[in-house]
Image: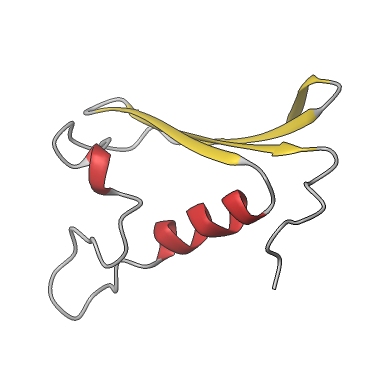
Length: 87
């Protein structure tokens, strides 16, 4: 975690796994998108996380390199917008 400026906080999660292929990366936040076998995943996890972060006035980004790993950054405002859709 870090505070890149006075108005935001960031949570960074990284791994050194196999990475996400470039052709898959643009789809990972799409609802029901999964690379898992049929019956092994719903493809909703990252889509739900994306919507939650947006509802709080934030952003979630991903950077990945095949063979090196993946890095997610969740950036949230210290003071969320008043009309944040938190329900």
